Length: 396
Image (cartoon, rainbow, N blue to C red; front, side):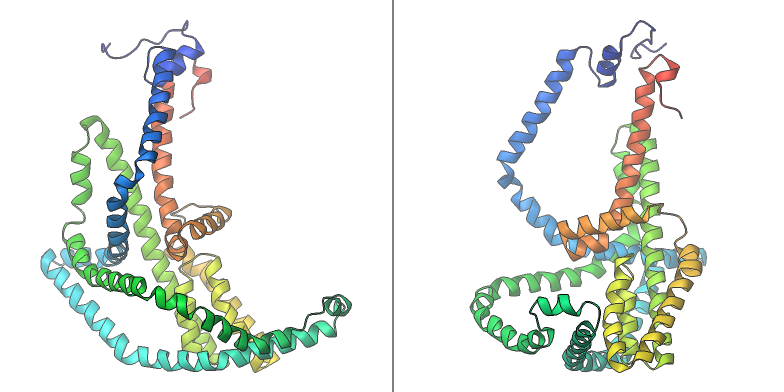
């Protein structure tokens, strides 16, 4: 028996097992460890200003790193296919960059002007659409079973909407001084954003070139006895991120194409623009489709009652095709996250980190789940090591 392994005996009490499990030999050791941990947290909280440069550094590099990571997971399968075709990695990266540059140029010169025209027309027409919807809602409430309650509120939706532009103009005038005062900080933030976007291709190049070597570098820095567990965690985290990013992007593209085609068929205005909006919002599970369909519903209500029916048919068909065929085939059950959990994660991440939290909340939760699952596995193994009674052990 190795000298560093404690013998398991039937006489060991539950309290002794817990102390040994925590790594000590007496209750005093455990209490001192807890006290030292609390003291370290208190000290770090008092000197948090020391970490301000680190906070600035992280806030500066996090955006380009996230964008480059998304690009890495999207382009890595293509690079692997090129390597299987006996094309060197450097030449494969160059080919991918040239193809990506050509595709972006094509979108900018062919698709973007059309989308820009549709967006400008929608911005000009949307106030009248919204006003017409409020008029219809007001008329419906006054002639419905809720008419007495609605009139008792002494509220006129139409007058509120008509006075909104004047109120907005007054608010804009009052806020002009504040906007001018914050102009310098806005210019600085915008400059940082542009620089972040410019650095993305350089980070992406080195990720594609050496990205698969990075996990091995960090794993080799760990003690040898921890490397197998770290390698398993890194592999599972990589699989989760890769499957989510690639699958979600492909699903979003499919939804955007189906929505655009469906809206063109039924004669919906701004069909391509609404399809692109559906594509981008579909990246956010469950909440994205609700955001995408809102402007389409408003336009359909103003157009005609029959357009609402056609819109409902198209949206139902798109959701059925996505739910029954596209998402199961592309996404599968890789994440294994309950829908209620997804909604809670989106709400919490959105409250904490805004739009970035909504977009990155699910993959972040998936990675965190990998770490927690493996740590719980190690926890059970260590706990069973110090519990002699079979009935009190975790089941494998």
